Structures are given as C-alpha cells and as structure tokens.
Amino acid sequence: MTAVPFQTSEFQRGLATNVLGRVVHFRPAVDSTNALARTLTNEGAADGTLVVTDFQTAGRGRLDRAWHAPAGTSLLFSLILRPRIAVGRFHQVTMAAGLGCVAGIARATAADARLKWPNDVTLGGRKAGGMLGEFGLRDDALDYVIVGIGLNGNFDPAGMEGIPPGAASLMTAAGLPVAREPLLRVILEEIEPRYLAVCAGESLRAEWARALETLGESVRVTTHTGSIEGVAEDVGEDGALFLRLADGSRQAVHAGDVVATRPI
Ligand code: BTN
Image (cartoon, rainbow, N blue to C red; front, side):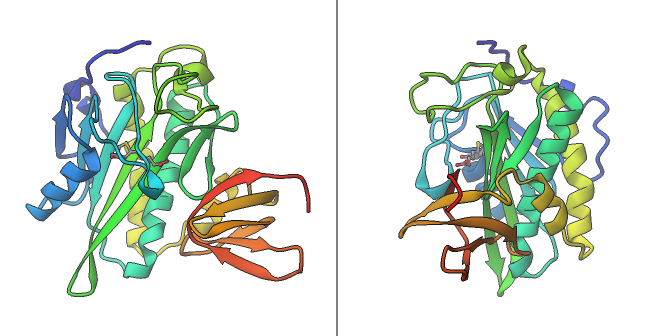
C-alpha cells in the first residue's frame, strides 16, 4: 500500500480547466465528500467546486452501501455542479463524469478503464470505482448536482474488509502506484468539455453506450424488487438500461447491479 497525503498545490499546478476544480476544498479526513459538498452547496458553492479528501469515515455508495478506502491511497472526491438544464437531464451529468474518469485514467495510466451500468468504473472487467450522483431542486428546477467519485488507488483490495470481493485498483491493474494529483487533474480536464456539452444541450448517450462494457451481453440485473434477466440492448437518455427479455418484450431498468450471464 502506498499512502501519501494529497497535495492540493500539486493538483492545481497546470490544471487546464475553466470551471471544474477552480475552487478546491481539501480535508485530510471527512465523513463523506458528498455530505460536505451538500453543506457547501447550501452555502452557495460555485459551479465546479471540488471537494477532495484522503479519508472518509462514512463514505457512501449506491443503494445505501458504504464506500471504504484506506487513508491516503485513493481518489475520493465530489464535484458540485450547477448546470442550467432540465431536471430530467440530470443523468447526462453523471454520464459526463463517468466518461471523463475513463478518458482521464487512459491519459494518466496504463490501465484500461471501462464503465459498467449504471455508474461503475472497471479495470480489466473488475470494479475499481464508482459514482454517486445526487441532485437538489429549487422552485422545481435543478439547483445542483453533486457527483461523488471513488477510485481505488494505491492498495490491493483483495481480502480487504468492507470492499466487495473481486474489486480492482489502479495499482493492481497498472502494476505500479499512481500519482493521484495528476490523475485527478486529467480526470477533471476530461469531464469538463463533456459537462459543458451537456450544459449546451448535447447528449452523451451514444458515447456513454460505447463505453459501457455489458451492452450487447446477456445479463442479470438485481434491483430492490428482485432480479431480471435479459440482453442488455441499449441505454436511454435518462440512463435507463433497456433489457430484451426472453419473451421478446423490452423493459427499462433504472437502478440495480448488473452481472453477465450465459445467453438465455
Ligand atoms: C458506488 O456505490 O459504486 C458509488 C461509490 C461512490 C463513492 C464516492 S467516494 C467520494 C464520494 N463521497 C461519498 O461518500 N461517496 C462518493
């Protein structure tokens, strides 16, 4: 395990963005960067504000799960975004974040990153990170989107308590420790043009679909009401996964966990 304190000044050196990460709140430890981001949002934080930490005492994952990473090893951050877009386009913002992560990892490391529906980052087919998107409304309009991102960095997750079996990290995938500051810098540089495109009304659905590793495969999706099997045919503008079921019908799924299965 390579644990080194995050250096904000090193991250900011040469950061080529206009919006994302221009304001940075670094905490050596925090309950959850998403929770701190929410507080800062209520205090009027600007579009693009970055919250980053070395350690979370109550990191949150999707579906009410916890998110763990050893101190000083990983990327644990949240972006406060204030896009002037329709509420229904909220998922386009998380698509921008996911695509930016994959492109940033490709630029900064030798690891081959993909996305897995809905919001996982995978390395060599194994989960190495995830995103938690939250939004708030004001007068029925979108007020903010908080995108929290955790990427396993310089540790081996195998057998580590609190981390699901089979998880990967940038270190295990790339074979050597990664420098977190330049990685975060390029990730924000890759998210920004996609985020601005979404703000300008463009759709990232097609690029997102290409980056998703399970599209076209037979899958089982476990949702809070049970599990459903089918061929993962496509995704929608709102991030839904379209499954073709054995009876020929098509069903949209909005949340859950996907595993590949044998063809049905
Ligand atoms: C998932 O379940 O896959 C999503 C994990 C998201 C974790 C990140 S770590 C930084 C940010 N703060 C949190 O509390 N959660 C997100």
